[in-house]
Image (cartoon, rainbow, N blue to C red; front, top):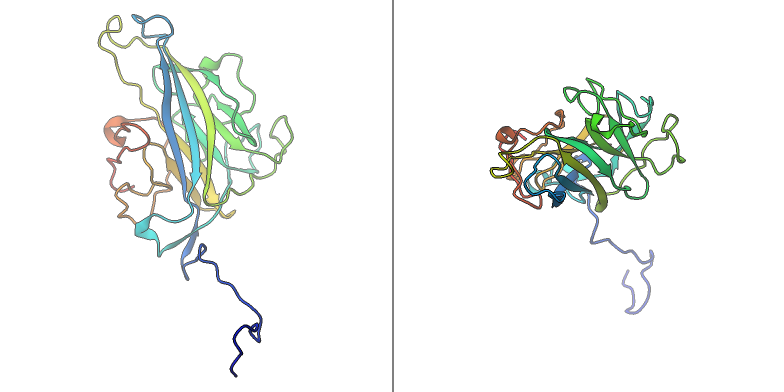
Length: 274
């Protein structure tokens, strides 16, 4: 059958999208990148004293719309969803939360936390940093800040827009965060508690890592990333690995092992297995 020019097709018009695609037989995977910068530093009015300085860290969460190039045929990028935090949030050990965690750096204490982005709640942990933030050793999280912030070992943020203000004891699961989403506005301040150098003349190093925890499409396999580079889900920086690492660490920074970030999350992993 030949259709006359200018007439509608016999079976109706069809349109194809040129911006969405899926790889057949690929694994669904959320690609989450936690990004972190030292946004400001203050000598707190005492240039010769180094045990009262203020450092402000800014974090953002990016859920990628596509896999890293080396694994583009192995994965389909999917939404980021929550994971059970075994130590609990306000004693809730059943709801699935997307968690951003940051271990307070050695030689500092938590000084303040800014209001997080809409839908996110600040959480605090006083558990030992030998524990893991999400599972196994069971770091305990609370939305209630301790009376003395210097006892906080980790500060974090959980995604809970569907739960009314108050404790997260009966919280519902974190809703999914879609691919191609970038969330900014996470910020906290630490104060130095250790003297670095002699009268501020030699200085020192403060090392810090942020982490994000979740799952893919409500599944059970952990999605995990550390700050310091641009690659998501702990894929290696060279882009040559077809898999990332979802084995979490305690978040205590060790520059000799982890490498350092010269700025804008452009660091390189010295651990080539990640």
